[in-house]
Length: 339
Image 1 (cartoon, rainbow, N blue to C red):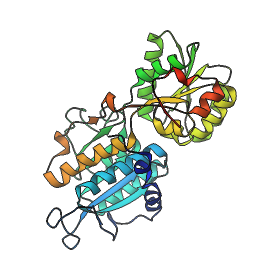
Image 2 (image 1 turned 90 degrees about the vertical axis):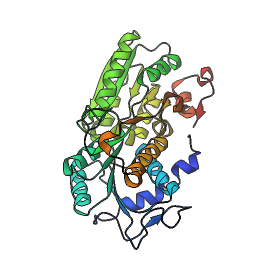
Image 3 (image 1 turned 120 degrees about the vertical axis):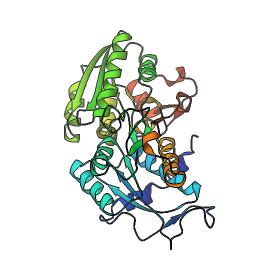
């Protein structure tokens, strides 16, 4: 279900606006009724629409698209719901405050986008159903007992990326590369998991991995500048801190002629050279479908395994301007999506 670019991004402006609203009890005064809804298909406004709190860790394209996909799934189902859109601006304290506000406001369900957001919500309630997304491994970060059998009030959709395929893409595009800089933020556990997979894959492929980490966005420029002259290519997983600053990363790397192979399509759109990527709109849509099962069918998160996008749903995407700056020949790829 790869959506055209306009449908995947069509809600960004409205979602961003909603994320700037002050904290309120879960659900605002406006009820959203999906197209095609019919009387009796869901609680009416008078009877009380579903109250859904949406906590997004920070604003960048991948998480925005996850949010869009979730909303689209609800709208397609035609349910009445009151969304309370909140953005924590990558601040863990803000995540905790917003999560507690949702709990106190009596949400019927909370959607958490990004690992720290989901962890804050899970810590705030063991009763309200929580659906998470843009999270690599729910089990390893303590959100569920196991990915196959969550066992609590949390479930959702994982953004585990095809790391091995991405490293293979790196080798295909930069065949002479030996030293691979692996760039991620140490504050993000899911990034560490992907980085470990990348290190393992590089070692198996005879490449030399060189982990380069930041603890916050303030360190990105200096760390990337330090990588110049040390690495032949940069690999960055789906890390929220790096993704939000991808234009800065790619600007330094392109000027130095260092290709950047990245974790997802939005990071390519923001300047990365190429990726074999999952689709974050689809990921959010899958989470929305799970939320609908909970709200309208009585499903329990405890019994809902974490869901993943199939490899067949991944997209090969490349940035022509970055490739030209780094001397990468994209013609060797089989029909990539170019940006």
